[in-house]
Image (cartoon, rainbow, N blue to C red):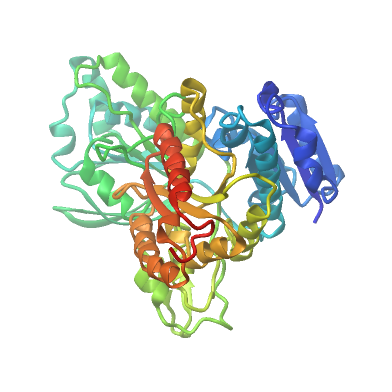
Length: 535
């Protein structure tokens, strides 16, 4: 596989700490193209990468520098990856090696350890590219229709903007919709425009009873006093992200992140105040009740524009992350059916398991529950996870090694956020803590923990979403159940189960991330036997 490795100095923040030449020495020989740039967000660097994809006929790309979070949470951050995909690389083979936020910035006091860790992280990313299949894309023409949940001033303003641009809107309210909305007198004309528009529909007393699909093509069933109605829309706008009933109903079918109050949360309040982790679902940010009309109008415009940008594209592509069922292995036991919280798995008339891709959220629970390994997660395949655990265990970092499984929803962004805390406080953690990103706690099989100890790790720590905050509803709780059962197995193998720690965390708790890692090392230091043998 022709592989391209592109390293960013991140304006000097990386090579101030990491010996870049030493960090890439192990993989440079097997890469078709290796380049080091001052900053991968520089237009000339991005153009060079795109040309290499074509000229060298690359089949995979590793971007070593920023976290994958940087490409999704900074304005136009996706542009680099989108350009690489447009040049011919499958998105599942474009992988970020995070050597800035989770290496250079948190281990500035240990250049040797940081360099060894950076080398391991880059090798991990290359392994991920080499062992991952291409993701299959489903192309659709976005529907020019929007479901707005909650009739508020912001909802009416957003509806007017959308209607003026040729979209149709469905405004659903848990009460009596427009008749009870508190509209300022200056917006009476706006309310009248929306109420009288032929492409606007109001649904009072609405509840979401079913949902499936993705950006550009959502299937929603609303129940109301008038009965049940089915809607096909391109996007969803949550005008009342503080109404927890809407949130609970959405989370039963889609990925929606919530804050400590149970309110819907955008992916970044500064750069993406309206966008959620599900690209087709937007929110109007919650503000104080005394906000002025112009602030409400600005918030509505922001949310409407975010949807328009998504739905005005000629096509959208949804990439499936769950593999097809291997019918030579599947026995139709229905373990996946019982496990899936989204109702995406079923047993067909042929006796085999099937996945409804419109309902699947790629959490990985069905993969872990399958007793025969009949399916896999394409972004975190089994072979990759096993080989990476072994590879990280063999890395050259000094000291007791701890493997950190970081769920993509909370654990991984918390690890990124730790860099700001380390810079401010000066408190770091050992470079021998080696991170491994997984889609969800639900993807973590007990096999991977056992493999980690077998490979030589001194400890394993899992950072997962807090209870009630898992993007996949109960992926974290299912994982807890498995891990607690595993503790008995560890003790039977003469391993102190204190070497396995489960940490609940939110995406913004960088300080807690550092504290918990240091607590893990303190625990390891207190154990009398080096590898947790008989006490």
